[in-house]
Amino acid sequence: MNYPTVVVNGVSVRVDDGGRYSLNDLHAAAVTNGEATEQQRPSQFLRSAQVKRFIKALKAKVQKSTSEEIQPLKVIKGGDESGVWGVEILAIRYAAWIKPEFEIEVYEIFRAVMRIGIDAMSRLNRLDHIINTETKEVSQCASKMAKWGAGGRKQLLHSARIRMVEEVQMYLPLQE
Image (cartoon, rainbow, N blue to C red):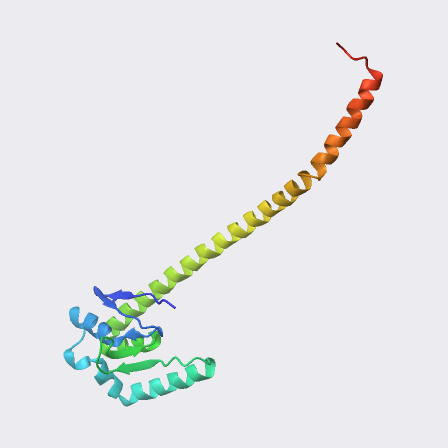
């Protein structure tokens, strides 16, 4: 599944295959705008007792509500995708930990992305409705055409016309 990338303060926040956002990218966005310090890295965020309780509760809720193995938090050490990755609510929680104004900004960006997705879904639903309606109309026309065509109503009407022409010729003199 593809997830939308969000841009915060001009920094593209990456999203992994599980829909988790890079908290490191969020930190870079906050630093770029002067809203965070180097000491507010995701690793420091994860050390907070309150954040640990939040993540534990989040994991429990995810395990109850889904059979999938998607973890709300993923920490990768080394490699191209290294860093701290968290689901949307955890990303917003991290933004709040940095600074309330940054939380509001990140929340509004996520909300805007959601509205764009809902709008796209609405357009898709309208298009599906048009396709279904027109498919039904064309199908009805095709059915009517099939009944009209070879061996159908057209042949019946032509046979009736030939009989009528023969009948008319019996009563009307032929012109030469």
